Image (cartoon, rainbow, N blue to C red; front, side, top):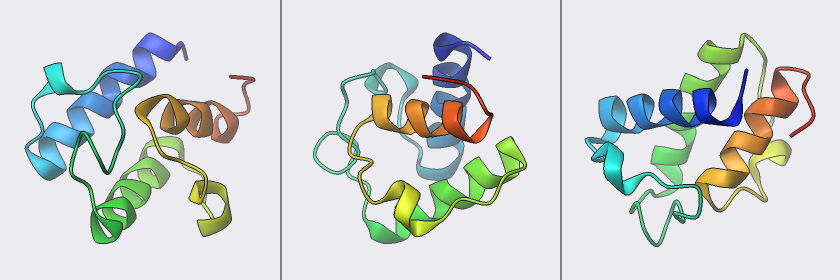
Length: 83
């Protein structure tokens, strides 16, 4: 799955879960500062990504995630692809 495909899915998830307009979801958007996600939102996003990838996501894997680009990197890793 390409970075663009993952980005499009992520835009769908963020719109569905948090009503974040897709045009706000860019690679460099910061989850907390730009998209106003808090720790509870992050848990919801992780659950959605687990459902999407079919893989368990550990808290350690997501500790360093700060931007949309970081999320895409983690999804690549979960799908067994190099980001």
